[in-house]
Length: 115
Ligand SMILES: [Zn+2]
Image 1 (cartoon, helix red, strand yellow):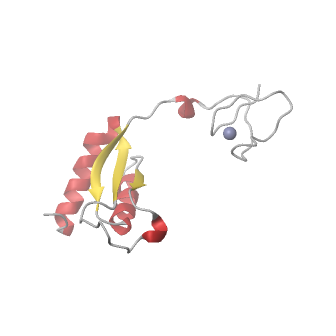
Image 2 (tube, helix red, strand yellow; image 1 turned 180 degrees about the horizontal axis):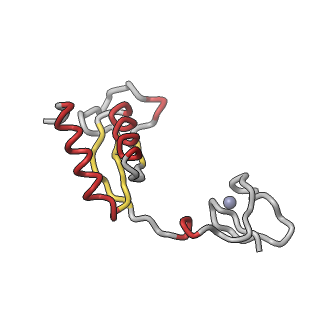
């Protein structure tokens, strides 16, 4: 049976594309997609620039990182309830948290960001 690799729905034989996600169906879901990732916040982000910097830094170390923005992108710059650490959060898988935190803390101490 074909499956959608994105939303993991099962489809009838003969279906080629998931109408929900617009992606090609696969015969079997890949192992890594089955794995459940527990995300943990490694750092609060003051802005998108710092977020992207830390994300690529972690990825260059082989750590998966995701940015969760707490603001609406097209309202960025509207500082109604702005505080220094409220732009977003940097998330990493729980099993890579310690390693990621070390890298991030080390990096941020050099940059002189934070308090
Ligand atoms: Zn789908």
